[in-house]
Image (cartoon, rainbow, N blue to C red; front, side, top):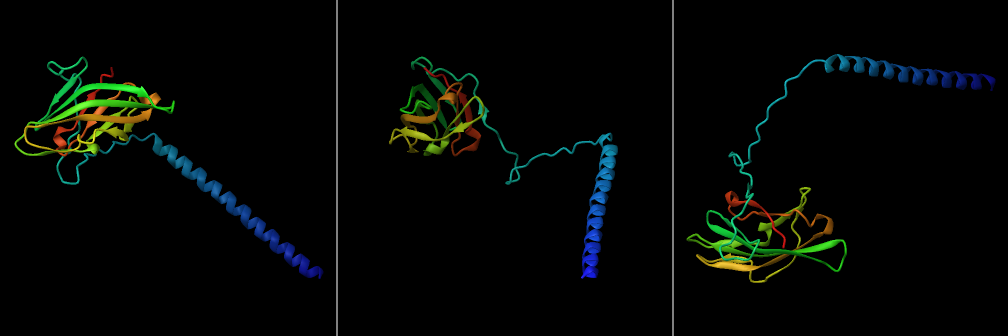
Amino acid sequence: MMVVRRFILSGLCIIALLALAACNSGGDNGASAQSSSSANAGATKTPLLVTPKSSSGKPGQGAQVIATPSPVSGGPKGSQEVVLGDRTLIIYKVSKQKSANANSTFVKLDLAIMNASEKEIQNLPAFFQLIGLEGDIFSYQYNSTDTFYGSVAVHTTATGSIVFQLPTAAATGLNLLYRPEVAQETVIVPLTIT
């Protein structure tokens, strides 16, 4: 019985020594990796220049920022007009009001899309988003005029309202991101809230 105990104790000691040796050798490798890493840290590497390409093989085009939109001729104070290739975006009025929830605010846009082309254009809810000061994008539309969305016939105008619900803390310094089906006509317009 005594021999069995000694045998077990000897086996446990060997296992403990092997485990300790494994831990120590890991520490040596870490130190050597650290010293080789420190040696490479002083070397200057030239960054690799990467030019992104769109999946279609053509360079993409970003949104055009309209810093100072034209006022609407004969329109209300603060109205804005943005003339695009096949349409004109008219923002008559932007207003905000508190919602029932103190943490959210409604931002209402009274606007129009005027078709200036020789073919029908689209006007969809997904075309309109708000961008906050911090870069947050809000697309949740709480309410809108039912007849505003849909197809806009040749040389006609769709007029209506869109109401966005967003956090009260983000309801200042807003921009409208208008991204229609024609990518080249994507614009960002700073909103004048009255």
